[in-house]
Image (cartoon, rainbow, N blue to C red; front, side):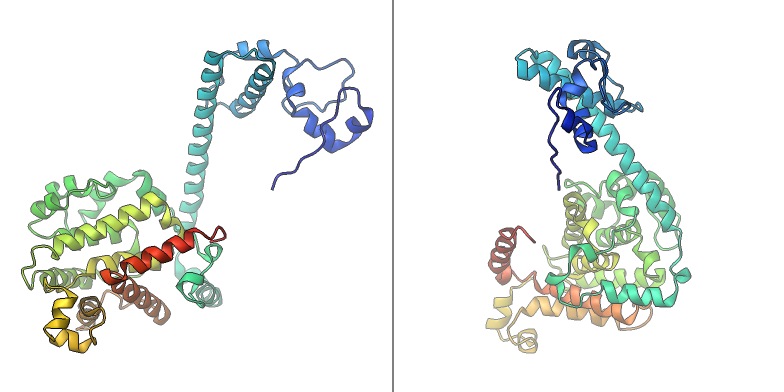
Length: 394
């Protein structure tokens, strides 16, 4: 919301005495770019420069990261506006000052982002066990989806932790690889590191990763993303169970020697959704549990794919079609088979330490996302998205 106050005219004693009018006038073009008259009642110290526009613009451009850069830039831009009104501004001066103003804004943005990351890092050291149980219960009841996925309000979603900023900015990438390669769960050969460090890029080469890893592209992408988002620590995922589960997941993708819906395809989709979460900024609006569900759903979404279509299963009256009543036959099978794999024993269950509520919420999300990969839903999804985009309030 912006507030507009009447700007005092020269010599208008009535308006000049009003504190709001005086403040507005102090930042007006006249106050910034003209000499202060003798006996002026303008407040001091808020950006008034007694010199003319020409004298102000003759100064050296402000250094972007200097203490007074913002104030000096604002004054110079006001002076340029005044010159434009008089038809006296030159294009080179205008261009030079606008470029400098952009640099000042960029510097301020970077500094503010750095401060924000620093503040969040201070909070990241707090262990969940130190939070009183009643507070945890309140948070759980507040941030669970009580009215369905689409009705959950954006302002109720907790901000993702500073690891997101680190991933997006690439601040700790090399250090992260060095640390990850030393973990007991999965060691990173040097040729794998050289490929997977580009996981944030659209041009990420899943074929090169699969070759470098010895046909284990899915294992490295899945493990890498869980590590980057700190989901292994956050949800206390047992490393041994994670390794066993991913090994079995890759075996399932190779079950039918499928030339397309194989483990490389799963790795590709998982990396792609990671890229989209980062580059759209959507990751900032999701909880850690939702991020976990998205990555997991992408990794399992074609598990044990037969290489045939839903229509083929329906027309041939396969056991799978009979089991799922001809509805999203393969999609139902993929998610069901993956969960049966999880529950085949504790040595496979990567969700063993999830709370009952988190387990239920994650499963609801995963089932919904995997079933949504049925291409017969495509045009309805496009229609729904267009409808949402036409509603400004959403």
